[in-house]
Length: 420
Ligand SMILES: Nc1nc2c(c(=O)[nH]1)N[C@H]1C(S)=C(S)[C@@H](COP(=O)(O)O)O[C@H]1N2
Ligand SMILES: [Mo]
Image (cartoon, rainbow, N blue to C red):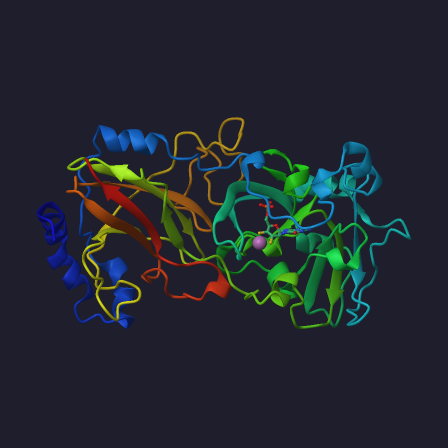
């Protein structure tokens, strides 16, 4: 192994060993309580500059990556067509019906036929006293990469369910959006009614969302109204919402379930580096930044490790538990939140102090954080940088849920070359 890299690793190895010694895989849970091993030196100018280039914490509506099905896609309609099909604020309405196959007992349905469907005006009326806002990262379970991070505003879905005076036999809520009146194009999702009626573990409520980062939801993001489920992957947050069915069925019928996905998986904690330069000069310190998704179990650490590709990897160590990981710095709350917010985070927003507009805790669960580390200069060679998170329960990525069908958790990886 080349000497500079080995010195770099040696500095941390003994402590890193002690980390894992006797802990085995079960003992990974103890990590979060151990002292910080690798203290970062004061960020020097290169690192500062790199940190300055990190994306904003919030994503502009138009910069979200889009996962929309439909032919044509509902957001491609012009204003006149949007009005015609009920996807403008003045023509939208939501039907809330009993599921004909598995009837829930309702005092009343909200229907177009009887002119009782929920209009946007009525939703805004409810919003006057009921609106909530929360930060959430939108991530596609299938793609695994975050599409964007936003502050979503809406009325709790339960408030609309209560309008139907539900009685016995209500176990699940099904919902879908506009689909060009073609049954083959329906994108459907569902939730157990208990999740809709009650917010467990300090979660924000499931909402009927109409604003993102303080602005009306744009057509691409599901305007005028979409569902947003704080703890879930994107497929639960159905866009262009038109129908809600209250059902006595107890099984999910999500479109994503039919496609062999785990439809009950809450957001996982994981990290990735931002792109590195393809080549780096020998001996030149390498500033590295990246993001972490703060999943349901929170985030306590981001760790980085550089492997010299000419060395073999330890056998039987699929998750690199024996590797000499060391801690990156999780960046604090930004001065500017980005996302097109007028100034500060609007009050009230879940997780933020209404007086100061500052977060109550950091990093914020179900959202994102950024991290940075300065790597020492390396001799010529090929290297692989890996990064992993340690979640708030002490589980090292990809644990505790390494399976792809529950959302991506693979250890972040990026190659680079050091050459003159
Ligand atoms: N009506 C409808 N809603 C939908 C989808 C869709 O295809 N149609 N895609 C879902 C999926 S799979 C994801 S990941 C999110 C993505 O949200 P975004 O497009 O706002 O980033 O929207 C969800 N809502
Ligand atoms: Mo998705």
